[in-house]
Amino acid sequence: MEWLYSVYNRTQDWLFSEWFWLPATIHWKDYKNSPSDGVYIAQPRDLLYCIPVAVAIFFIRRLFERFIAYPYGLSKSISTKVHRCPQNAQLESLYRRHPYPTEAQLKAWNTNTDLSNRSIQRWLRKRRNQDRPSTMDKFTETAWRGTYYLSILIYGVVVLWDKPWLSNPRKCWLDNYPRQHTPDSIFWYYMISLGFYLTLLFSQFVDVKRTDFWQHFVHHIATIFLICFSWMLNLTRMGSLVLCLHDVVDWMLEYAKLNRYLNNTRLCDFFFAMFTVCWFVTRLVMYPYYILYTTAVEATEILGYARSIFLFNGLLFLLQILHILWFGIISHAAYKAVMVGQVEKDIRSCSEESDSSDAGEKNRGHQANGRTNGVHGHSE
Figure 1: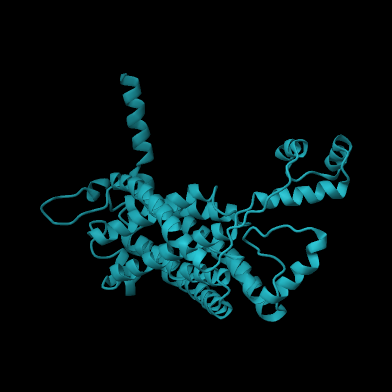
Figure 2 (figure 1 turned 60 degrees about the vertical axis):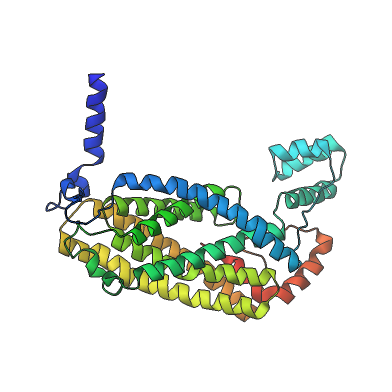
């Protein structure tokens, strides 16, 4: 067992190497708490609190969707209809293996089932629509996210309102870092945010599928690493700024989508326009100027050089790249909504496939709802 203990110690020394993680003037002993000074420094073991918080958030979501969002949606005549497909055991078996068959596979299906190519394609469209969520499913999910995003924004603003680093990010590195006190309000801000992103990381595999699924997956992974990284190094001041800045706009898009489901066109347009402007200001102007500059330049000037700063800033810059990509999607949706007057399809939500005989009706529906379809173009 001695060799195993030796391997464990070497691994721990490598994972928590001061050479990599800390500037030359700071050591791990500086992160130890002392009961005498009344300062609580964030500890890695605190991150375990996010597990029960994530479980609690999951159950709160289910209760909210079932007992608040769903009854409200029913009162507003939100459709619970799920598309049904005629049963065909032979086609079902083939579909489970190849839900999007090639031309060669379709010809083989045609021979094996004695059905025309058109009949098979129509059945496939109906079968794929059967797997798509109902409008009520999308409404309840959107209502939950909108409620959470607005609630966490209010909490974050209240928590940070009187903090000196809100107006001066340099304070994140000054005031005797790393021996900076982490108040209970910041502790719970972190645990709730981390718990929520953990639930998103897993629930997105069963939630309404989006076309930017993998961008969101990367975003959630990067965010979780940033939260954990900043907590372990007691960078909670900077971390709280990043969290709050990201929380500013998310609820606006969810409220725009909610109003689209409720056919409140004016409110939908208002929230989407506000979301677009605020996204540009917070993610493409304030984030690089307010966050990236101080982490990439001022942190090194004040604390000294640390190799881990490349990892920290790499994750922050990854978020910025995603911000730019998503703003391109938002701008495209806004342009079509304002200049063209229609959006050909919902570029993030699962739009239903239709038979060619329904194409004319579908196009007329898009003309009527074109101005508001764009709100589905992005949500973070």
